[in-house]
Length: 391
Image (cartoon, rainbow, N blue to C red; front, top):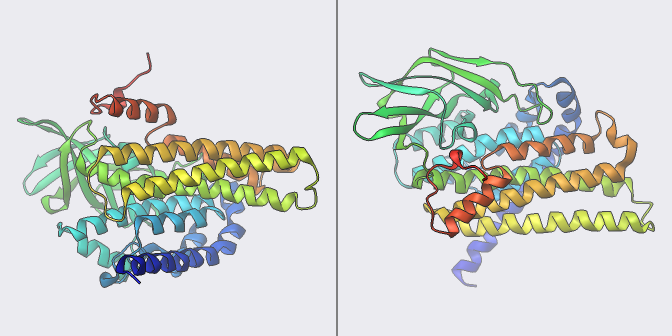
């Protein structure tokens, strides 16, 4: 057997083993999901379950104590978790994509990466990202001081805030010579001036504890500045981050929709002769299949060790758009098929119907995705995505 074939076999086995571990956590997650959704409380016990299963260290390289999971394998784990509890899957996805990007940095010998990965593997720390809310136009500002910067601002949608150890976040910096810049920094939750505002109260994803975090004149030493990049631009590093983060996040929404589909099949196992049910089930299966192909295609383009390419960003955003729209359609059909019982609070289908709506609020929304793809295809600048407007 060729070396390439052996590597593929090893990857397939590892993916199967990792998703089996995620599936084994399913009953615990499903049993708690309704209560956390109803109360709007952090999915603490579910998060503990996936931590104990070793799922929070899967993206850490094997030589540092992890499983060395590829981007695809991480995405498939999150997809499986989402079938049982969307909030647990989405919250942990934010840790997973930061860990995977830190592994990317480690492979290039970049500072701080190895130490962070070892803490994830050995100490079980959780890393948190504000990238979805910041992206190309972050809130807050950085001011240079001796030995580093003082950062001030308020970040929204900070998932897993109650258990986070380190924040991977961004601030705007005004440089006298280079103009407006973005500083990517790592800030401990325990740093002086960092506080959590417990204000997460939403329609869906109610268990992610995506509270606001306030930074009040927080000192960030120079060694904790991970990147200094142009403002308003999807530059090389952000292209890589997007290539890793969005397939992992998108897989969550696909998994939620697949869970709703499974619930519908269980409800209608004894009514297969009804042709209207057959058609709706067929349409759900069709939408899920195409969305799955979109995710597979994007993951294939990105590969295990992505390089900065705008075409990769276009691909992962296209997959995200397809998945978000398909998930909304599938859960809508599941509500129709389930009837009045799915309209009751506590129904897993009703919860899925609300949870998948959150997918639109990660960069990019479906319309911006099309504009970004069109501008890329036409050779136009993609430097200011936050400023695009439909005519």
